[in-house]
Length: 215
Image (cartoon, rainbow, N blue to C red; front, side):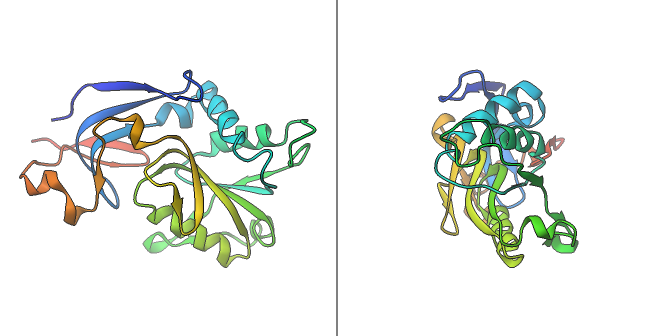
């Protein structure tokens, strides 16, 4: 049974908020005992802008960015992130740049591709990958490999919530971590303690949201 949601504030800006719902959730690549709901950060204008400003702090003065590749429908954050990175700040490495904000296309078997007219913004460019959630890292790893296949250089990754600090040698900067959700646990299906205890799955979940399974 899914418990009541709890609101969690970002330590770097308490006006950025997510929700956590306790239960047994079957994700695409894992099972979790909490669903971390970041819908407002991805789709609320004010929340997305605040999130982008915090994320930009990790990259504005350390990395040159040409293109932001958005995963998990994080394009609203991505647009604000491009704006934050290119502010007229004399110390920013991206001052007054015109950054591209794009997403890969998912083909059969979730293969990622970039169409011919987008490839010039990947090939030879420095790429920042922006994600919603990073749990097992499989989707981010696939995105890293896709960018490299098309000749891009991945300079870093950012996420609203991440269970990992790096994926494939690429550091992941995030607004929230499991430490912000006391008791949070994520594991592969084969290692799920809730399944082992006979607890039924409460909901199917992915980056779109969750759907409760009638018991």
